[in-house]
Amino acid sequence: MSKEPEKRMAALMAAKPDFVLRLLFFSIVLLGIFLLVQFGIRGYMKYQSYRIQTEALPAPFDDMKISQKPLSIGDAGTWLATSFELGQSYAAFAKDHDVSPENGIIDFYPVGVFGARQQRVVEAVEEYLSIFFCRDVRRGKEISDEDIPAAGRRRHPYEGHQQYHTVYFIDSLLPRLKGSDSLFSVALTDTDLFPRDTWSFVFGQASPDKASAVASLNRFDLAYANEREFLRAVLRTVSHEAAHALDLRHCIANVCLMNGSMDLQE
Image (tube, rainbow, N blue to C red; front, side, top):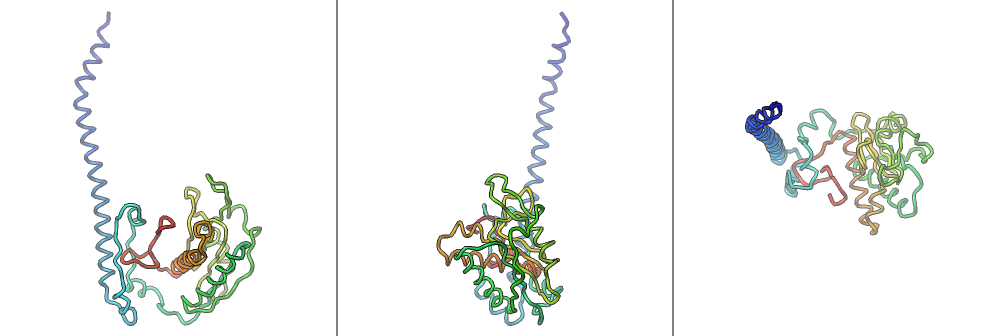
């Protein structure tokens, strides 16, 4: 009887300790790289957060610092626990932008058919945008569900309801409709939104390059029976996305309108 299988087994047993040591070594190296990246990134984000918190601001913005509440970076379950963002200082924004442009109208486009409660919120959003950004708001042409092409929509892969593709709005539809005197354009719809095929949904999205933003009432309408809470959530989302359209980035320093969010609670 051949002893070849026995020799192979003996060779395998002899090599096993070396294989285990190599596997252990590479596992430790990978763990070290992971921890270095995680703590390095978080550490740098905390440094950036501190720089923004302590930045000297011109009047009247300096008076706002007394009410700022520092934001915690890295708490489990929060948007900053899974996102790498460097924030934006006042100086960085002012360097590339006119902080208080004299001209520009806000173009506002309701999309779809709204119920009575939703319609009250839409009208409040239109008024709020004018007050918040100190600009006139121009109600644009009526956009119906039939105006959104197949490329701009889908059925939710798990829940089955209709969704609009945010990219179609901010990169295609709104730039086409934008007036020459427009500061930025905002669309508000009662239909749920998604940004790409791998995402379940988003509350809204914006493009500073195209000065356009879109937001949805859908998930807030379902989540809040109280109309005041419903309105509050929508106002925050629309003004957040509109500010992104003006190239304001997410804030990583303090609790404010420009914080990101992963869910309804945030």
